[in-house]
Amino acid sequence: MIHRQSKAWGLIAALWVLVGVMLQSAPAYAQDALDLEAYRGKIVWVDFWASWCTPCRRSFPWLNEVMAKYSDQGLVIVGVNVDKERALAEDFLRETPARFPIVYDPEGAMAAKYKVLGMPSSFLIDRDGNVIASHIGFRRDERENYEASIAKALSN
Image (cartoon, rainbow, N blue to C red; front, top):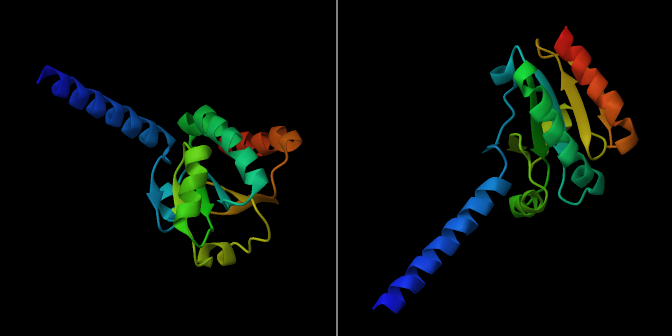
């Protein structure tokens, strides 16, 4: 009897660890629409990405760092995934976690609204909802410039 109980507790402990790992790698929260009105008064970095995009994979650690560094000052980062199959996005996020909200746009309506031309495409939005900067792609050697635009927007 004790042997079965210890196996059961071992299985429960393993499942608990697995759930904890899954929760840590899940995005901060996921939604199906981008509601910028919810972020009025904040500086918002909207990042369109796809699971097949190599530069997107490189940008996520930087986005996580910037979110952690500037969130107390009013920065919000929102990732918008454009994969037609949500499972592809979820696989990406297990491998490359996001510490910011993720919105799903499988039909491409939001991408069309922002006239996204490549992956990733990012838009910096001021406290009044105006796009004040944008860029296509992610280049590590441009991180300082990206961050400088965020810092400038936060100081206004």
